[in-house]
Image 1 (cartoon, rainbow, N blue to C red):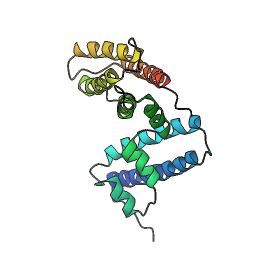
Image 2: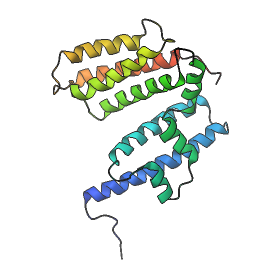
Image 3: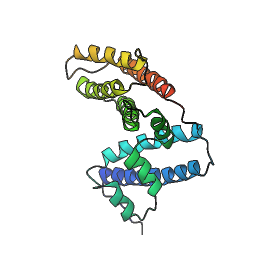
Image 4: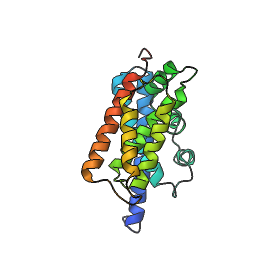
Length: 209
């Protein structure tokens, strides 16, 4: 006799999300071990890790009302994944970015601020992918990003990311809170964020990896 795990579409989606979360945690643990053991290069590790962190944050937000904490989820399903928990929950950024952030640390620049900027970039781009294009959704995200970028002294005075974010903030301030970006505007903003993020990463001192 076939046993059904769910009674309706909502329950089915919840179980599928839980399965995806389990897979992401396991995959992150394997990726972290592969990087530490030098099985994969930094260039291979970083984009995969960023993708897993992004997927994890999106799923965690979706399952917020279902699981009280990721740590309890890990205990419930007997997952032995300390490296994944550190990367996904504690750190929130790939080890390679942590290393570069540490190299950039000075009296006015800390690893925490660099990591904060990276997270705001990822959050902003993910928000657009999830079609969160209303002004009152986009403006706070860009505001957080701009504030973090302002804290960094290692960036050039005319760093394109700062300039572009200020331009977008000015544009959004002229719109109503319920107004939405057009598809063309959303694509352009995502392009500007991606371009600024790449410039930001290039501006960080190389940690020798």
